[in-house]
Amino acid sequence: MTQKKLLFEKLQESINSILPITAIVAAVCFLFVPIPSGLMLAFLLGAVHMILGMGMFSVGAELSMSRIGGHIGSAMTASRKLWVILLTSFALGTAITLAEPDLQVLASNVRAIPNSVLLLTVGIGVGLFLALAMLRMLLAISLRTMLLVFYALVFALAFLVDPDMLPLSFDAGGVTTGPMTVPFIMALGVGVSAIRSDDKAKEDSFGLVALCSVGPILAVMLLSIIFRVDSGSAEASPVPAYPTTVAVGGGYFAAFPAYLGEVARALLPIFVFFLLFQLVRLRLHRGPFMQIMIGIVYTYAGLVLFLTGVNVGFSPLGERLGALIAESRGRWLMVPLSMLMGWFIIRAEPAVHVLTKQVEDLTAGAVSEKSMELSLSVAVAAGNALAILRMLTGIPILYFLVPGYAAALALSFIVPPTFTGIAFDSGGVASGPLTATFMLLFAMGASNALGGNVMTDAFGLVAMVAMMPLITVQGMGAVYVLRSRGKSEEHFAGGDEIIELWEIA
Image 1 (cartoon, rainbow, N blue to C red):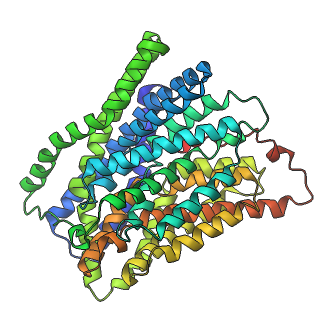
Image 2 (image 1 turned 180 degrees about the vertical axis):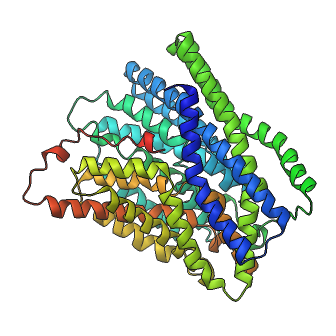
């Protein structure tokens, strides 16, 4: 596929993802909730920036990050040295996470912790658990066993950590499985799985993303021991007014230099790592090398545009809209509105269509594409609604997460192992960029307007959205088991057909 055709395809996917939520918000603002016209203009310009940025970023991730991961994964495999695989996995997992756009957005909205501290903490968490995930693949350890052990540890610590940091911990796990990290991690996994020659090697390549999501949760929990967050310091920042069109333009022009430097610092570690590998080990020919370099440029430009659009126009309106609705008599309308947004957000995600089609193929039609789409739409709509309901009522997040994860882990004993891997890996698909960029800010604005604690009430929305598919996808697996009773399951049990989750990203 040519670069021009690839760029057109990714821009179309970006439009399909961002336009529905933009249209819903615009309709609400024009018909029901009065928003300053300057802020509305900034929001619409932000949507354009996000469409262009996400499209270019996706092209860059496909041309560069996936290929870098594949090449380095092959090089690690060729070394046949465990310490090389583990150390390289840790370093790459840490480096690639720092450039994840969803994490960048989340970190910028946590005003009680320095941005660099949170990014590094989450990056180290991903790096450590990526190394553990590689070790699991090499030693053929059951994914269910590791999930049970680590989530038991997570919930044991959950009752001990600072309550203000608990929702943020789970959100950190949700945002790390984004369009930057997933293709890279899965490409590494393909290379490492080649070391094993048994029938279950490919099946065990599932679960990489699932385990990498646990690392940030534990890392931020441990960070809470160091950072004691005062609820008053976590209030939402003032939303810019943008009284004139010149002010809107000035806001964008002022933000560009800052994000040019910030994104450069985020991408620099992985860029330097690739160049060192190229000089020492890879020695790619000019053509493949230049393709990767062009991809890095696309990644850089796309990430700058995306973050500028998010922070200058898109997120501020979400925060203001949440605040205005919360202050009105119709605050409970936020629950059905969030469900509507969630329904269209997930339906517009191109990654979801890839996932649902492949599950239908994998189960030979026992689980149809339409039923999978419906289950994911219900999951994200319910996740959004429960998160907003929790924000309005102040119910502790553990009241939702403990039974939710207990149900997900219980289902892992019922469904085929591949469905468990798909479910836990696909949680990141549901908690896509729009959840962190708009829905979280929507909840933060409402919480601040109601005089609540933003850290305990608003944060946790990403975690709720990421949790629900663990239940619904495995629920589809249970349906598959029931429908397959008495029939041959050879096509599934062998694990020969693999859902390529790096395509989903």
